[in-house]
Image (cartoon, rainbow, N blue to C red; front, side):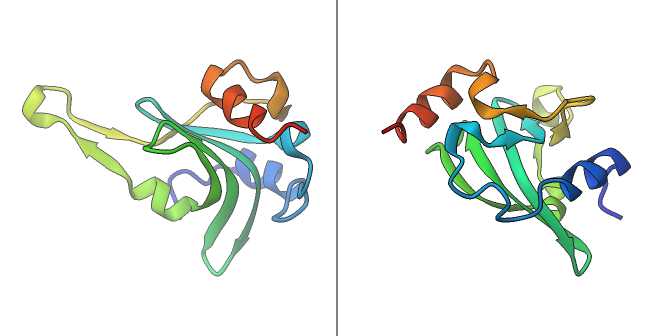
Length: 120
C-alpha cells in the first residue's frame, strides 16, 4: 500500500473524483496538500484505480507553477537525499488534518498569483 494513501485521504477523494471540479478555477476546493521542502501540491481531485491514485491539482515551487496530474505512488517514492549535509532524507509529506478549502481562501502568495493569471 502507498505510504501516502491514508484512510482520511481515500475518503476525502471520494467526494472529489477526477474531473468533478472542471472549470471552477479559484473556486475549486483543495482537498489535500502535499509538500517536499518548498514545493507544494494542492490537490483538487483524484481517483484510485489499478493500485494507484491519480490526482489533479496545482504544483507550486518547481521551475514553473502549473496545473497537472500526479501519481500518489510516485509522490510517495520521491525523496531528496541530504545525508552528506547531515540532514538525512526528505520525503513528501501530507498536511495532516487539512479540511477541504476553496483555493481562493488558501494563504499562499505564489498560489494566489498563479490563480490570478486565470481571472477574467
